[in-house]
Structures are given as structure tokens and as C-alpha cells.
Image (tube, each protein chain N blue to C red):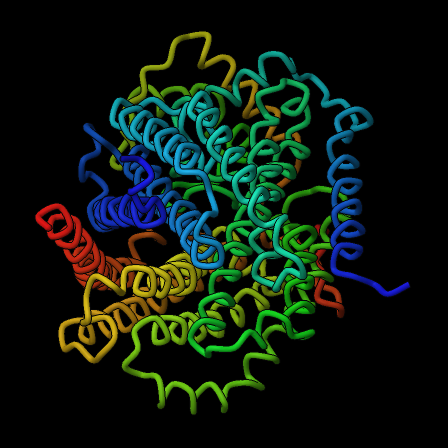
Length: 445
Length: 137
């Protein structure tokens, strides 16, 4: 029975449900910016924010896991033992259920982005170890790895390393010196994001190989160079998060210098823009390709923004402001979610012909996501820049009054968030609907 | 010898490990903070996490975006321990009242004392160099 289940799709379905729940909590949390008393004495912002952040982060991590499982099973149908993948999913489900119940009961105890009781980190870590074991068991049988297998491998290993590093604070030694503690915390946050990006960008390479029908991309020297540059940044660029923290000079300089190597990625995107535009014209109606192209556009915007924010002289105007939130939203929704949707539309494509040809409703949802996200991103950036100017110019205006002056931009990001919720929910529900329908039909036959 | 991807991977990974461990050993040679009860301060950090204060507040601009930066709240004008405790226990327009025990409050105050001693979190006190780097004046 268990062998008949397609765990890649099941992982994706679970991840899509997490995305749906995560964006609902995100919208509720954003409404607190308009009405600070909203749910103040019940759930409160202190629970709404982690509910949103954790569920969306889990969507990305589980979506990345689902992409690797599904891709590896296309490479080798016997990849990944059903029993260990089932156990892996069960552990995630236990952890996420415990985390969500904990948040509803106001039980926290962790650090930013991982606010849950550290006990729930245990099933996640065990599940990830099983993932690593299963992945290596299959990958080590493949000779001459294409770049995406390298990216998956490094992403999985570095996620495990940084996830464990994320809990060093449990030992009092690491909390003794506040600045070191903060340095390690933001070292971890930077590298964790880098590690799941490796897995997701690896999936994008894999999908482009499949779409183009040749494996040139996966074995090109340029792809390997980009992979190692990405890995180099994952390991050493995190210092750009803590320029204002009075930590050692060398940490900030390493962060700055390494971050500037991202210009290479940026220039490459601009350089390949013309050929990309030609490809868009010929593949526009193929949804996986369209989502990959959308992610390319968001890479362009967010990488441009990230490089500027990594220059310390500019960073003091953006640090601790909504510019950082705009960057986080732009990357998690614009880049990660677009690539994961491309993967969903590829791996679920046998459930609906609609994914392979132009579909009016899907077209509307696709463009609504892009436009509402752009408005969302711009309004957050404007709010952030205004706050940045306030904090650098030593204004006599109080924090309360400054936040009040940003209200039009908070309203814009909340209302564009409603459109984003509707359009993302439509995409999720469409995929889930066809998936469930196919299971019901299979059983009926 | 031809350089293969595995060689680059190993060199980068080893460099990363050395860099990571060099940061882990900082507390051993860091200057001890004066007049801080470390035991209480490190417990105070856990109180901060237990009530998820980071969802709204920041240290050095790192944290939530709804509330104020609390790095130097301990020494801020018209603030101090009594005011901080009163705000925590009674709440305000946007913040609910938190029912911390006396011990939790004491530990949290010690933690705020520690964050305050670690440096200044204001942004208008930096020198900008030609290479784009910033240093506190």
C-alpha cells in the first residue's frame, strides 16, 4: 500500500496547505499595522507573526524537499525508500502540528523565525537526517553529477549544519556575550536561507534541463561557476546583516566583500536578458516555464536591491526597516514560491491538461500574483525608506508618530496582500483540486 | 592535477568550518561586561524568547518592525527599570499586558542592562568611508 503512494506529490500537497494557512496569517498580521488593537488581547501579533513566518518557511522547505524527491524519482524511479520518506513526512507533520498548537497557546521559546519550543526542532532534525540518508543513497550511484545534484547535496548538508547551529544558544556559554550571540544568530539566519535557496535553485536548473530537452545547462562550466559562487556567498556573506552590530571589523568586511561578488550574478542576468525574452515568446503558454521566468524577474529586482543593501553606507538607511521585509517577501514569494510553483505544475501535470496550454483563470491568477506582489513590494520599500530617513536623521518625531505617518503605505501593502492571498490561494486550490480528483478517479478505477 | 568540483567543495567547506569555530570561541576572550550578573542576563534572554518580544522589538535593528528598538532602553531618557516594568505589566495601545513573575522581570532587566552595555544602537553616529564601509564615531 505504502509503495503505491507518490510521496513527492504528497509532500507538495502538504506544503501547499501550509502556504495557504501561512498567507492567511500573514494577512491578519499585516492588518495589525493598520489597527494595532486587532486581536491584541487574544492571539496577538506575537503569535500571528510566527504563525505566518513559520508556515511560509515550512512551505518553502517542504516544497524544496518535494522537488528533490520528485526530481530524483524522475532520474531513478527506485530513488528514495517509501518507508523512510513516509517517516520523514510523519515527523514533519508531528513537528508542525505541535508548533502551531504551541503558537495558539502562546508557547514560544525559540529565536526569530524559529520561535517555537526547541523540542520541536528534534523531529525536524531527524526528518532531515532521513532525507540526507535517502538522498545520498540514490545520488552516490550517479556518476558525473550535473550541477543541480551538487546544489541539492550542498543545500541538504548545509541546512542540517546551520539548523543545528541555530540551537547553540541552548548552551549558556553561547549566551554569555550578547554580541557574539547575536553574531551567531544572524550567521545562522543568513546561511539557512542560503541553504534552502541552493535546493530551490537546483530545482530550477533541473526544470530548465527538462524543459529545454537537453542537459547542457546542468553540465556547463558557467553553471558550476555560478553554483560555487552561490555556495561561497551562503558561507561568508551573512556579515551584511550585522553592519550596525558592534562585532569584529573583519566579520563585517568579509560580509561586505563577499556580498559584492553578487554583482557577477546580476550582470549575468542582464547579459542573458535578450535570449530569455526570445524564449518567453516561444514558451509563454507552458506554465512551469512561465513561473521560472517570473522568478527570473524577481531575482533581478531582489538581487539588485540586495546588492545595494549590502553596501554599508546604504545599509544604515535600510537596516531594521520595511525595506528588509520587502526583500524577504520579494525573495520568498517572488523567487522561491515561483520556482516551487513551476515544480508543482511540472510534477502534477499528468493530472490536468490545463497546465500545458493557455488557461484563462490560471493566466489571471498568474498576473494577479505578479502585479499585487509588485505593489506590495513597492509599498514596503517606500515605508522602509521613510523609516530609514527618520532613524538616520535623529528626528524629534516619536516612533509612534513616525509609524502613523507610514499608514498609507501600510494600507497599500495590506490591501495588495488581499489580492496576493486570493491569487496564490487560487493557484494552490487548483493544483490540490486536480490532485485530489486524480486520486479519487484512480480509486474508482 | 585537474581541479574537480569535489576539491572546491572541500576547500570551501573547510574554510567555512574554520571561520565558524573562530566565531564560536569569541566568548572565551571577549571582555567581561562590568556590573552584569551574567547568570541573570542569560536567563533574561530566555524570558525575552519565552514571551516572543522579538516579534515586535529589535536589538541593533534586528527583530520585529512594529515596536521600538530596545538595545538601549535601559539607559534611555525618561525610561529606566521602573518605567520598563510598568509598560510590560500594564501594556499600551499596541502591546498587551504581560504577566511576568518577579524573577522573570529581574532577569529581563539584567538582560536589558547587558544589551545596553554592549554598545549604542543609534544610526546617526556613523562615519561613512569612501569604500562604502561604516564605522561608529
